Image 1 (cartoon, rainbow, N blue to C red):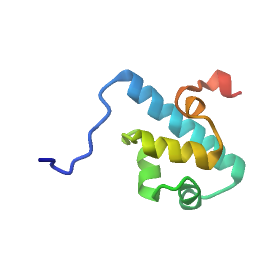
Image 2: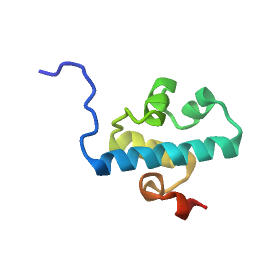
Image 3: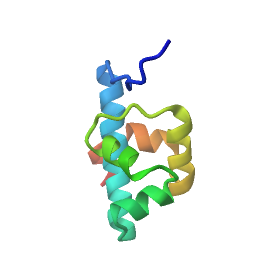
Image 4: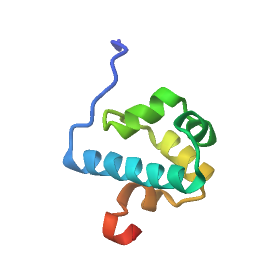
Length: 88
């Protein structure tokens, strides 16, 4: 039986990946000049889901990450593992 509570990220690697996901998504949102709600729709996620990614409390599934990757035309590897130096 599940309690309906979201599972929090419990590893440093998981936190690293969500921070990178948030950074790449914000970079792409800025490039496209979109608001947060518009950008969430483009990524095929809800605005609250997008906000939880940005604030680091999200624990997105591979399905969600893949949808974001496809919508932005960015490889999953870049979404999750790009460091700031690599992005510049």
